[in-house]
Amino acid sequence: MNKEIITYIEFIKKFEGKLNSKFKISGNIWERSGKDFPKSGKVGDYKYSFHGAGCRIENNGIICEYDIAPLNGKSIKFSLWKLANFIKIHPKLEEKEFSDLDKELSFLVQERFLSKLKIDDIETSTYQVELC
Image 1 (spheres, rainbow, N blue to C red):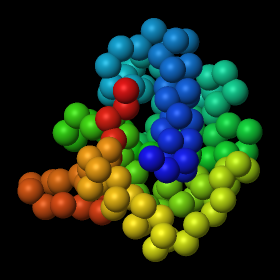
Image 2: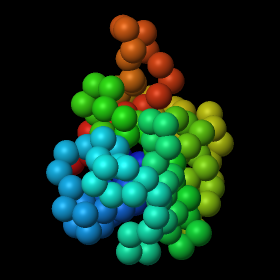
Image 3: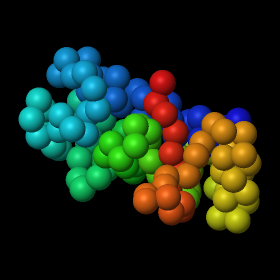
Image 4: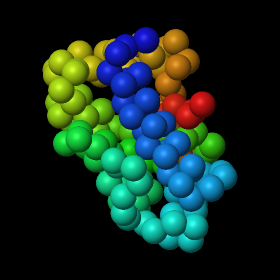
């Protein structure tokens, strides 16, 4: 498993844990945004903004973008660009070339840790992982 994807997922899990704890949310938080809690605001030391199919979170200058709309049950969806920007901003991660990062993500798809989002049986360039 690569350090970058684990750090990315843990960042999201910590944010969603704080959101769930504060607002007593169950289920997909994207579906609850704007209903059970504000679409944008602050929870703990995280600023957040739900938009379209996704969410932008910020903590200590680190920005994380991800998609969460429930298209097929997978919780976290992201593009190579979103992950690369997270890595670039994160002070404990070393920036990588897009091609190297793409190879690592492809390997994680082969290992079935990640999958590619399919819409109408057409594989997209969006990666996804179930949030556990």
